[in-house]
Length: 430
Image (cartoon, rainbow, N blue to C red; front, side, top):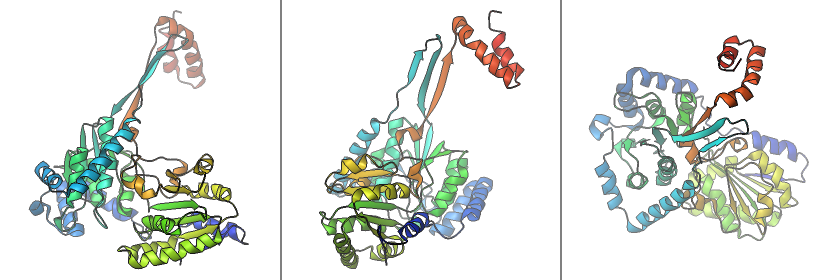
């Protein structure tokens, strides 16, 4: 049964602390297993990938094919239901338009000392995107990962996705075609991350790896970081909803279940200032679960990790919500802007009664790859700049070096680095 708390209850602070600090990541310590898989792939390359794919996904890559051809992607797109194709193309347009606005500007100027200073942005050459293929197929994740890479100017986008039994969802292939993915490999799990990071005989190593996955994928990304860049180490999905009693309880129940159905470890939390409304939402959740195709997963998530918290006023929820630093935050109330202006930590915020989180998962435009597990305190969602790097530059002439050089010499000598100092003094007019 989902947790029920009231801000006025004795012991609320301790109970809320326990909720904030609850660990929802997989119980198994996967670090050692992932380290062994990465070592195997580095040592044995494609042979390891073939063996591990047979073990975990139940198919022979030499028989089903290592890669998905461009022809297969084109056929998947052409064969789509027209309404689905329209939906994917609308999503792609909106995602592309939003991310175009994220492209950073180069800088090039001379300061008061006459020193030319600036920075130039360049895209990485190759980006790897990981698309899950276990519990469900996620064409939206293809768009959300590949399109920002395209906007950034990445030369080659390489997709890895597990294909249990060798089967791949045509929606995923269609999305890859729309987004402009260059390579698709039928490989998943930690072994796919290792292959993208270090390369094998068939797969050329990439510079950045992005995309969600299970605990093994997340741990693999953590372990290869430094060899390649990564977007983030993502955990189970989560949503926090702040709602007053003027909402339709059926809507809010559906919003909470929209995250609960992702995974048994997902988390859905409601804050409200209306105890009667809280009860009505709880009843609607029970009712919706009876008819939900994903009820087994959603019910476990809601019962194990869900919570309804009653506060005296919605403003009381703000510091509590900031402590949770949730992946998704809905503000379903009359004046959401007033609350939004006080929020510091959230992956993405959905304003008003008619903005369900699910609209952000698909067609709104902002990226749905977001920090989880309270990481919104210090990180942001996937963006164009995750596929770019900044190179600074500077240029001195004799006059500007005369102005700032002596200070550099003084600091170099203070740090006990005489060669540093000499490299400047030899150029000064002394």
